[in-house]
Structures are given as structure tokens and as C-alpha cells.
Length: 192
Image 1 (cartoon, one colour):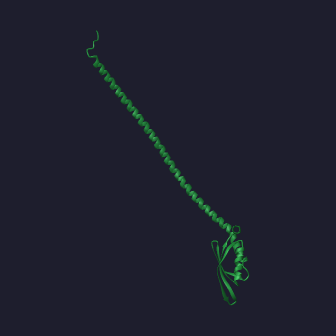
Image 2: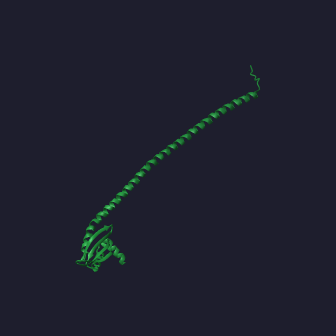
Image 3: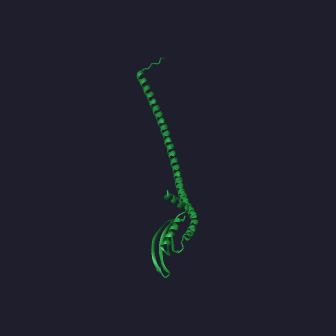
């Protein structure tokens, strides 16, 4: 028997196209959803990777900050130790100068002059004493200035006093301590 289609062929063709369009639309939605899901997963992965890198950098920065603080502490300790070493070196180098200073105080004394008081404040020495005359005090000051261990002898006070043994000059003077190398440098500056 021959197959006769009693339905209008156009209506059936339209239904077929609608079914095909619906299937294609559903397929497109599923593909779009899969693409969106994959892109979302990929972006989340990138964000998570970047967050992990950021956290790693934060951890490394924290470690470096601790190391920097420790280095600063070590630098401060180093500076303190260097300052202490300089003080010790200065004290060691000044040990013989005390002996020379006392030796020069005695060897520069002219006859007829004696010291009654001696004090030191840093590089400045305060001397007090008595002499037979003002000329002896002047001679003592010249002797101190000529010494390689003293410089800048300055008379503070000089008074004449009558005593049972005669007239004496009571004086106070200051003098600065120096090393022979400092004294020669100072003389070259003044001479040149």
C-alpha cells in the first residue's frame, strides 16, 4: 500500500524544526554552562594560585623583617663593642702618658718653686703652688710650654704673701696635656 500523508507537510516540517531548535538550544545552554563552569574553575584556580603566591611573599617578608631586625641589633652591638674597644685602646695608649706627665711636672720645676695642689679634669690640669718670686712662676710656665707633654700654660692667679721665712708668690695655673706628636703638629701649625 502506498503511504499517503494526510497531514500537511509544512506543519510537520515546522514541528521538526522546532524540535531541532529546542535540542540545539538545550545543547547550546549545556555547552555554555560547561564553558562558564570551566572558565569559573580556571579563574578560581588563578586567583587561588595568586593568593598562595601573595601569602608566600608575605611569609618571606616577615622572615626578612625578622632578619633585618636581628641585623640592626647586631650592628648596634658591633658599634657598642667598637666604642668599647676604642675606649680601651685610648686607655692603653694613655697609660704611659700619666707616667710621663708626672715626670715632666717634676723635671720642669725650677728651684725655689713647689706645688701644693694638683687636679686633672679631662685634658686640663690645675696646679697650685708657691714660689720665691714671680720670675720662678714665669720660668715654670715656660718650662711647661717647652715640655712635649704639656701645652698652653695659663696663669690664673698670683699673689704675694709675707711669711715668717720671707715673701713668697702663691699661684694657680692651668696647663693642657698633650702627646709629643700632638705638640709637634700644633707647633707646625703655629709656625707655618
